[in-house]
Image (tube, rainbow, N blue to C red; front, top):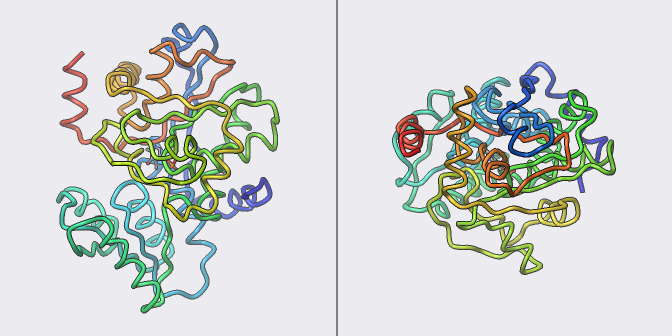
Length: 315
Ligand SMILES: *Cc1c(COP(=O)(O)O)cnc(C)c1O
């Protein structure tokens, strides 16, 4: 398990390299929930998501390596590319030929090498493993790694510093690095605080694994909360037990509920991706009412502009 000391160390290590993001009170969601609702605006983080915290901490902890690698093309891949460049280190992001051009370009624009290999995510991951085994790279996974979890946990530290009276934190949940880190930090300082995980109904691997009592695979389905897709790893070591032990509640949202969250946050001036809107969606659906003050982690901004416009039009 990752504890408060490791998270405080991570906060010192990454200070000045990641933004301390602001908090805003949401009047509309406060009305809907019946308790004060505060938004932690982490979609304003550099690279557009909290993942920079974990990646920066993990990179800072490395000794002498040839570079870093991962198979994520989403927010973790971007974060790792940025963190590596900031340290003058080589980054190779492995991806399959199915990854759309705009994602490949985004990785290259961050100074990383996009290595396109094979026709599936599994093949891309094998290449990342090969780079680690044969070429001296460090493979930094997106969530199941102590330095990544500690880095994401710095978000929990910040929330308690900025909102000491917080009674509950709603956390978008996929592989569980964010929830594990935030919960470890927040509960160490505020043992009574409630940690509520939120995923989509379509293909939520952590929810299925918790129900099964062990990590299981789920079929991945298209969802507006695309950053919450993917498995937790059948060999999961850290995030599965931490989420199981630290999470108080789990809410699963429909696609319509996620869309409503995206639309509502847009009205409040926040352009966010589906994964970041699940807290707002849960409040609006009447499925998250407190206790308050209730903090919603708005986790990322990386949504295709055309998709965002379509969702706003569909209201
Ligand atoms: C990765 C991600 C999540 C989920 O984080 P996990 O650590 O995998 O649970 C939530 N929101 C956004 C925007 C993300 O990129």
